[in-house]
Amino acid sequence: MNPLTLSDVVSCLSDYDPDAVPVAQAQKIIREFVTPVRAVEKVALRAGLNRVLAADIISPINVPAHDNSAMDGFALRSRDLGNDAAVTLKIVGTAYAGRGYDGAVGDGECVRIMTGAVMPGECDTVVPQEFTQCASDTSVTVAAGIVKPGDNRRFKGEDLEAGKSALSKGRILRPADIGLLASLGFAEVPVQRRLRVAFFSTGDELRSVGEPLDEGCVYDSNRYTIYGMLTRLGCDIIDMGVVKDDPASLEAAFRSACENADAIITSGGVSVGAADYTKQMMAQLGDVTFWKIGMRPGRPMVFGKISSNGKSAYLFGLPGNPVAVMVTFYFFARDALLHMMGADSEPLPLMRVASQSGIRKKPGRTEYQRGILSRNAHGDQQVRITGSQGSGILRSMSEADCMVILHHDQGNVNAGDPVDVILFDGLT
Ligand code: AMP
Ligand code: MG
Image 1: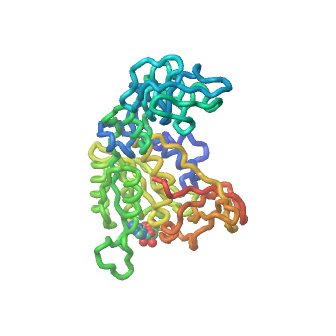
Image 2: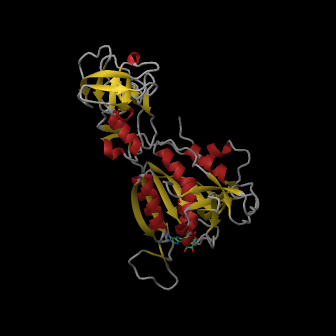
Image 3: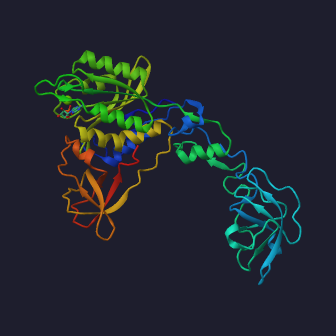
């Protein structure tokens, strides 16, 4: 089967207009067009942290392997407990975690037991140490009604049952997951190979840090925010620097990126008035589409696939403005890269909180405003917009701890109205 072209994808859409693409439609097109990278590698368990699990993991054992005690105390047979009266039980031994008590436990007997120790003999209940009376080396008294049969006993396989699914393919492994894999005895874990992403900035006005800042120039900050976002996503990065705005340099850069990476991210040179060769070169090398997206910030964006010498890579041509770069990365590139990485990417979780002030908003485009969360006098979460929302004002991103998403059809927001926010913390 031939791979889909972008025109195949957009031909299924009845209302596609590249000059007015709603955010959701652009997201959908990207999602349908990108395909996951298939290579898998085995890595040591710790190295699996933040990587994408490449196979379903079936539990090879029961965790825990035996019924065991959840408390330090005395293991007993519940049928020995008195209904209304205290009982005094004879202590016949001690069960430690990792070194159980192998003897029998008879009528009126119990075993001193530590947390995690295997439940001895026919014992089915543990009475915690602190609930007992008159404990000596040889006997212990348990008052009536202190424990019910089965209390304080952990069941074999209650955490993970042998033969059952423990983790599913596509999961990005978190600390709990590598701990869980360790509890199953896995020293290695199969993960998807890292995605290789090349990126460069375009614009003759850009200077790299360390260079003198000539008149009328700006330092290239996009390569740093992009570096940060890609690194957090767990991609292998290829930083190609600032590429001069001439056809030969751009062609060389695009071809090299294409031959060495799975995806390419550029910034700048895609806006309507851009007097440069970036767009021209993108069109020349591949199957790309030039969008004006119904969003703010970040209206112009290029998406597609470019090829060179039999190799191809997905292309995200992000706008140049520093805030627009981050917003388009988070809301378009991120999900696509996760999909390429083979990760399950659930829609980002949104929180609904009250806006501290009114926000002007026109229906018909999605706005991403930078916000700061706090709590009001009643302890309820609220959000306020950071000062200027200009798409060149990176400080607004740096000061913010969340983004307020004003959806496509939404209009003005009044003070106190609930709005959707997305937290930066945890946004990878
Ligand atoms: P462009 O989309 O190329 O027209 O750029 C839009 C604005 O973003 C211009 O003011 C550029 O100077 C600025 N810009 C473009 N690329 C970068 C970059 N890598 N770092 C900082 N600012 C940039
Ligand atoms: Mg430019």
